[in-house]
Image (cartoon, rainbow, N blue to C red):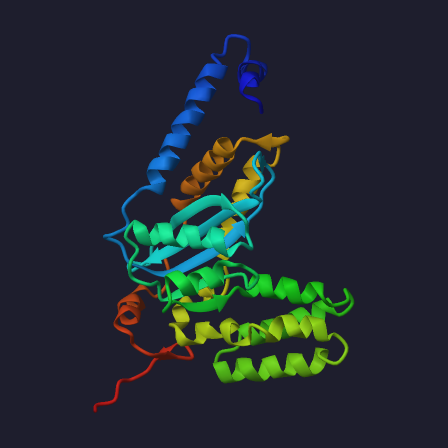
Length: 294
């Protein structure tokens, strides 16, 4: 809805005597949102420790007036299992430079300890930037994105069965079972649909990293769902916005909706495992490995 339409719209809904929001009030509110966003972007992260981060480049209906194509989003889970929006800015989804700027800004503001694991889509320029800025952070490819990419390269008639075989991989209880299911998928579909199988094989190792982390965390770290599901709400709330927004209005709108959604995010399950991850305890197939005496 345009700024000047609020008074007329509210009068139609609530009656002619309803006190609507004037264009001046709406403009002031949008300015306040932008100031909130700018302050949030500068907040100090030095006292925080984030073990997991999720990254995605998200497109939504209100297109920015400038040429940058999407909103770059990073969500983190801290040492207490709390999920928090860490970064959100406009940029180019596949651009290493855009992601490098986001990650360097996080480090500048105090996130100096490398996260233990990053989760995201395999196509992102994010991964090159991550290796430069947080060199020890391990990589987990998102299974939701990967499943969609593989299925899109298969005929529709094959997709339902192939989807079940993909589920057999990432829902396996052990890495050995997942590797066997992976080999079965390659053997079953590789002859006829080698391009689809190539999309899966190229990220084989990074798709199975989650087996080296607590089983209680698997449902959180196998996908970038914390971002995707939240941005579905952003898309829902902004789908009727017509045309292009200014950069400030678009970012401020998405920021306010994300912060509102953040209050409902669930903490990680198995929070008692987080100190063990910090200490470098080894996990295999989701289970803690006993330390043998030297």
